[in-house]
Structure formats: C-alpha cells, structure tokens
Length: 490
Image 1 (tube, rainbow, N blue to C red):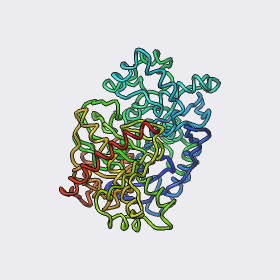
Image 2 (image 1 turned 180 degrees about the horizontal axis):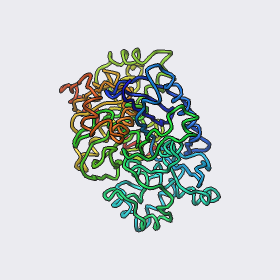
Image 3 (image 1 turned 90 degrees about the vertical axis):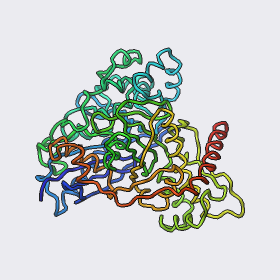
Image 4 (image 1 turned 30 degrees about the horizontal axis):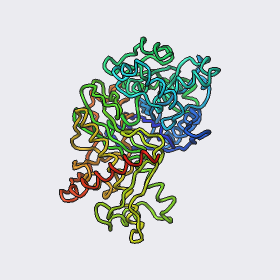
C-alpha cells in the first residue's frame, strides 16, 4: 500500500478529508457539511464541535475505502479557515460558538483602537491593518461584551489548531495563522508581549507558536476511538487554508502566485520578506522562510453558485458558462461588483453590496453571467494592482479551486490580468497542501521541492489574449470608478 498522508480542510460550509499516496494521488475523500449561524446583523458563527463531528465522520468514511489503511497513514496535516477566535478553558472545552472570518461584530472596537496613538505600531509589527474580521478584535469583543466567557478563557484557538488539539490533546498556534493576531511580529515570527499588553490582552491567551510542518503531537487513544485512526500517528501543526492551498497549487518559491477560485476569491504572492500593504493581507507561508501577500475577496465561485441557485432555472455550471461565452468581452457594458457579503481586500467595506450595472432591455441572462465572471476577475486584478504598490509583482498565476475547472472563467482572468495562468492537476489543492506539510514534517519527503515535484502536475496553461486584454483595461477603469462611487451609497 505504501506510505499514505491524510489532509483535513476546515472550510466555511464543509470540511474535506482526503487520503493521498506519496505521488499525490487521491485514494479516498469525503465532504461533510455543517452550519453557519447568523444570530445578529454582522455576526457569523460556527460551532467547533460540529467541525469535529463532521471530521470524525469524514475520516471514518475514507478509512472504509479498500485502498486506505489507518496503519499506512504516516502523518496528518490540518488546514483551516482564517481568523477564528475559539475560546476554550483549561480542559479544552469550547465556551461558546466562534465568530468566523465573515464576522464583523468588532467594527466599533476597531474604530476606537485605530484612533489610539499606537495604531501605526500595530501595523508596523503585525503587517496588517486592525480590521474586525481578524482574530484580535474578536478577542477584545469577548473581553468587553462577554466578560463571563472571557474570564474562563485559557486559550483562543484557530480552526486548525482546535482540530489538532482534538486529535492530540496538545494546544498549538501555527505561524501561518499568526497573521490574525496583531501582537504577532510578522518579521520576528514571535509574539510581542508589550503590544499585547497595550491592547489589553496577553500572549498567554494564545498557544505556543509552531512551524506549520512541525509535529505538534500524536493521535490519542480517545481520538483514535472516535475516528478509527491509529494511536500515535503524528499530527503537524498545519496552517491557513489559503496558504495550504497555495502550496497545493505548486507555489513554494519567491515570485510564484496562487489564484484562488473557491467559494471566495483572491490571490497569494510568494515573497522572501514581509512586504506589507494596509489594503492587503500579510502572512507567513506554510513553507518556512517565506511570506504571502494576499488578497482575499468575498466574491469567487460563490457568486456563480448564487446566480445559478436564484436565476439559473436548473441549469448546470457548464450551461451557464456556455451562455456567457456567446457574449463578447466586456459584456457590452454590463458590470458586476461581486461584493455579495461585504468585501474584504482591497476595499474593506463590510457594508458593500453586490451590484449589476448597465442592464437594459437588450441585455440577456448571458450578459449577466458574463458580467459575474468578469466581475470576479476584476476583483482579482484590483488586488494584484494593489500588491504592485507594495513592491510585490505577480508572475504566472497557479489557479486552484472549483473555478479553475472552467476554461472560460480561467481565460477571462488571464485576459483581465494579462497574466499566464497554469492549472494544476489536483482539484484538492488545499487538502493536498495540508498533506504535504505532514509529508515533509514526518520525513516522507526530504523538502518542499521534492514534495511539489512529485505530487503536482500542470494540466493546462492559458495565455492572455492581447486584444481582449486591451478591452478589459478600459472595463477595469469603469469597474474601479463604479466601486468607488458606490462607497457613498453603501
């Protein structure tokens, strides 16, 4: 059977569990859904226990496949969504549901903190603006709004570190998720206790830092009982889903760029130093010694999924894109702002809304679909242009996520950005990235070059069309003007 690796991905709508062989071939995989709770305006919560139950079920499913044996699994890697603030007590019990990355309840706290005299110090040390989606403002919210919970908190955990804890009984904080904690020094890769104190917090509220490929612990007897895994299986600290997806898309060297085409969109530019921009997201890569300058947008594949559900009349995604393909580049003046749940980088406006502009009686559903595809591409280009302001130039884009399966959508992104786009073979880039962390950390691969070269192949390359790129340059300026003007309306 050979050596196997298990990757676990804690997404927003579901967890993914996949088993890979040493060559990156998927032997078994499972998806298990869970809820997002919206108890108040601006709140978005999940129950970490529901993550764990779903993951246990997913692991049991993959272990039931004939090509998989728990005894052959050499290591486990866990990745997860960003900016959780899971309050747990000393026994590891979850004290309440965690606000997730979409949650903006701490916006007033952010406004107050950013007015303080040390706001620039926060950015200088953390490399990220003080925004309500991040972990730190949520910790402060618990302190101010739920003191009865805050008083019982032993540690605040991230999504992947919670699952690592459930597997190993060890609490950890991987470096790639450190970017959500504003007293994490992005250059020193260590906590800054003085800044934590200025914020009214303490570094004791977060676990010890680990390299993403460091073994954080081993599967306990209890975890083995509820999952079917072998007791003693090594579990690495894991990392941020976007960073693991970046690795799983084959991006592990300076200058390479990942293009995200999942439920949300965005990009990650790989760098050998911490280049920050207030409108973007700076974090460490899961590959040691590297950083990622990231753009994270709300609008990705989820925009087309929404359109299909509400206006698609039972059409599948291929039928939708076939309609869009009949419409010329620029959608004959129809524009779409893909801000379907507010927007993250680079406009950072939780009140932003999705907008169709340019509709008239001569426009069809195909125009609207084309505008959706182009709007997501424009949001990608907006982030790439912003990154260039910080001195980070993207080269070839390695695409990942479900949107990468669409040749039309990938071509539109190439034409809008003027960048060559490569599509790796794996449709499971994020779980593969988590598995590769385990593979390097447990010695299955000697380094990341071997891990990537052995497991990741490029299936197709799409080059930008010069004429369409010129058309899209003009469309991009109209997109930016519309986005700016709409800020007043929001």
